[in-house]
Image (cartoon, rainbow, N blue to C red; front, side, top):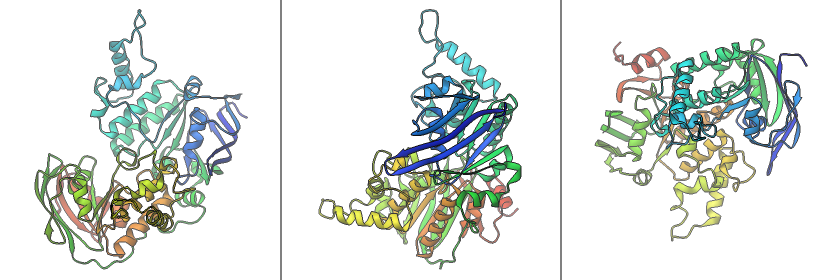
Length: 500
């Protein structure tokens, strides 16, 4: 082992009930490098990192830091040995301030041994000044957007002065300008000798910042290569074990009559005078920069935050939607942007998560018909290829891609005419992306009307029959599939007009 190796993991095995999550896995990371971990959801990337940090206890194998064998019984042990981690699923304390979240459990204290709030704020401000983060330390976390919460988590990880920093999907919820900021921070850390272990599903990021890439598949180590020795197609083939020839399998469908009409919809400053039509068999993409109002339009239609004014018509008839139950009765479903926050119910089973929106369908006399419900959920599991040992498995134990497919099943069980999907493939591996894209296309072909919000322009361009672009709460333009380009979408998203 050479002197530049800071981390060596060998023969790591980790099992959960019914699942071998890691099977004889190894990883070698060099000091002062960015080492990306790639693989489909469920491949074992996050599990291996949780073993490393001390969150999970390994069943077998060895971990060495700077050549010394280590045993971590908790995350505190990992931190004490110079390892910090930014988790994919954020878990801030919302009622506490930014400064309190960063120094939680290690607060600076005064001479009397009491927590020193002023010193905590000063230390936070000094940290933010050093890394060019413009967030007031006294702001409560619940007041921050998901993107700014993510930047706080990144700053917190750096604050430990760790020699190994694990970043699990750190850019899944932050806008492009913040991604560039993060990459600059990573370059500074790398130059100072810190090793970054980076997990992402964004291919452009991998080749932009990685020195080395390790690929996992089905809980096993596939290969480790220098990033310069791989291209995109080779990496995808290594990840999925097959060539993925069509990431956007858009099928032709018969676009029919208007099923949803939105007229002059208003809600606050993020939904302003929005009008559009959605047709049977159509995938309508909604694009725009973060904060443009895309998610808010879907939430307004679904009744999460009701409209202040405007009309919604389903099959030509006005409907009054004041809460999600009204939308479900109108045969509208919504797959939300944030799986953890308002999608999955983590401690419940896969079956219960699938069934929750359609319980009335399976309890016509007030009593749930358990056998019929079980059969319907099993059919959804098979149709959507949800990988789980059992429908009784807690959904929080599934990979992100399989959680997403289970949530799609939830709405398919309600037999919606209109399915709205917000960021359908965020934080999902390339193989699962292709599966979900194919499912969306099949749903449209079967006559469902689909609205898709996405921040990924290739996804918008690859899957949409028609594209609406939003800017500052308003629709700034509409593009057909044939005329849409990344440039034309960005032009409209930044306030340009359609004529230009």
